[in-house]
Image (cartoon, rainbow, N blue to C red):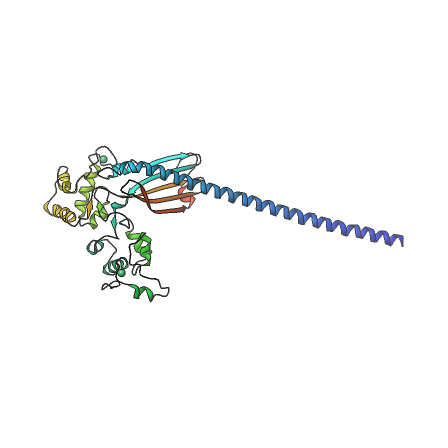
Length: 330
Ligand SMILES: [Ca+2]
Ligand SMILES: [Ca+2]
């Protein structure tokens, strides 16, 4: 009897020991699980903090550039040289900031361009141009190849026709005939900001072509702007100060024929060109060790020289595209 009681106690002790071991194992698993979660949370918090930090730095850099931009807005012309002088690159701890400024008047403002000019934009045709004009005009009278509310109401996912100006070029996606591929094709030629004239001091050659300047003339304008050294942003850059002097300015530099003269006169009489810009795109990229962000602000200045923000956009970039190391490589 004694022996069987002893056996029972020893078996019971063994079972208790196994239960205790299980409890210890479960507790240690729970502890390591909690530790893992805590470590993930800590990493995420650190990442979020760094993201906020880069965004804050980018905004601070934009504000500083806006201050400098205000000083050039009073000038009678806007040239590439002036805009390039606003470029800055700063190294703040583990974050590299680059800020650049470009003017919106270097492109065609599709909110204000005539049908004739819109049709010159490579990629646009009668259908897309009429649909764009119907989207912007206040009335409900459909152009031959356009679309008003009746078209948009019949879509599977209907929405109204805006009958107003576009606020971003991506709004084109809502208009009949436009898609992502077409927007990508034309986005460097068009804008939705500005006074509706193209600045001949800053427009790229493909925009000059849209204005009716052939490649030879567009190249002459481009060479005049670069100056003798063939570089942008240097002392010898040519700047057009008055649209009525464009022909005279180029002639001082190289020969210009009658057909080219007619192209410039046509652009002037149609009021397509100017020498000063009013809307600017300030772009700051903040690149850290693990992430990069881009902040783009489009701004203008009112009559009291106060900054008016027209659009503000924050993009998160893939860190692999913008790798930045402490060695300063970028
Ligand atoms: Ca309309
Ligand atoms: Ca130059």
